[in-house]
Image (cartoon, rainbow, N blue to C red; front, side, top):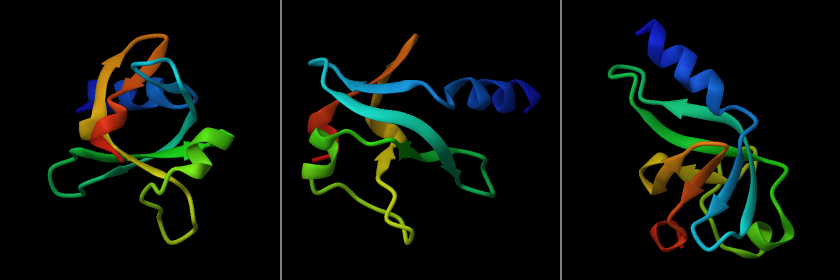
Length: 86
């Protein structure tokens, strides 16, 4: 469990890009399923103008949510499959 927490913290602040290289913003926070600890959504910080134009799911505060299931690679960037979120 401790390893998962450390992994989660490493995601914060990473730039989120699509596999075609479009920038979406950065990982600002994460939403977990409380019982299982499964990562459900990434909350986008500093969304780009491109991201603002997309009709993406938002939380009550108006922050853009990216389903964690759309993440296809994690390295220097968090790469998402854009077709999985639109």
